[in-house]
Amino acid sequence: MRVLKEDTAGVIIDVQEKLYPHIFKNEQLINNLIILLKGLKVLNIPILVTQQYTKGLGPTIQPIKEELQKFSFIEKTSFSCCDEPDFKMHLSKLGKKFVIVAGIEAHVCVLQTTIDLLASGYTPVLIEDCVSSRKEKDKEIAIERMRAEGAIISTYESILFELCRYSEASEFRAITKLVK
Image (cartoon, rainbow, N blue to C red; front, side, top):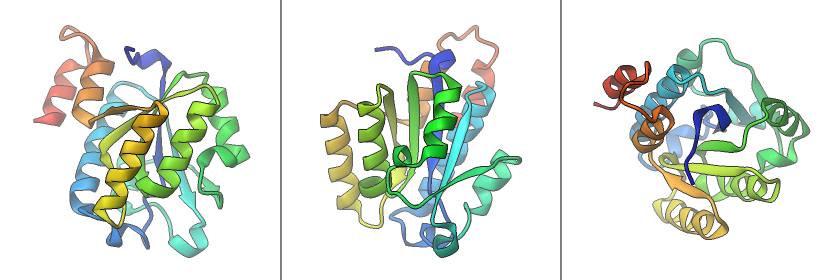
């Protein structure tokens, strides 16, 4: 199934100040997330951002805030974004079929959101190199589960070129520069 940019939205799940330092390979994760975000912006893909219990886990980390510049986050206390009415409303208003999923933690909020997106009729596209957990094994098992449930598994480079689709596309050069 081809993921088309006009049918796609993105969600960055809970990349927050108090959780991020404890995440497996967090520096690589943030580098990958920033490239993904830059590419999604080049492609004009709408992006939703969630924060889990901001009072306890803090705000979205500064590098993501800087990349997105102006953004508002969706506050949640449920693990699944789909259990948050504001998230469901914002996602529904976008009218998209595919949802690019990135963030933390892979085995909790990312997993539950992905399963619920599937149950709600969306096609989640999990960006494997843009998700993580505190423990590597938790991430691995979560990805296996999401694949088994029916999510598309991709990488930031692969999905950006898939969304770009043609080397003649106006976004192609910008995407190429990002992934080099």
